[in-house]
Length: 202
Image (cartoon, rainbow, N blue to C red; front, side, top):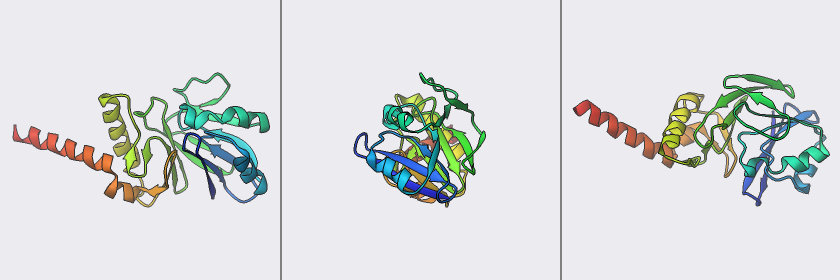
């Protein structure tokens, strides 16, 4: 599998170009900003862009889609909980999407937003704003934060610790590294431990 990262200072977002092999059909994950550098990345490597995956509907991950659809005839995939003004394929939790010669496992991890998805492709986890290097995604309130922490613990931290993480913002990481050093996960995990100890003392 080939993975190319394109970073844009507009929105400070990462877009990922993914294919099963060189000069084949390819997909984009989160086209937050489409510029000549991204177009050249696709064309210079001889890829046929056919699909776009969206981790969630926030503008820094979707804004470039308008430009992209003027250049390429692409099929768009996003959460069934999303609501876009264009036609797209709704994705469900645990679904396996087979496109571009790849098997893509869909993981619904709500909290940052209701429609947040994570894509597991081989040994790569594309997390959008759900889980990033050293932190988790922002949430509008305490309940959403608790939901996000629970979802990450149940759905992501149970995966192979050697899986690579490709987030929507920031640098790549690895699940094992996040288990050991992610400040948000460690801090909130400590809070949960203290609560359990308090219950045990009652």
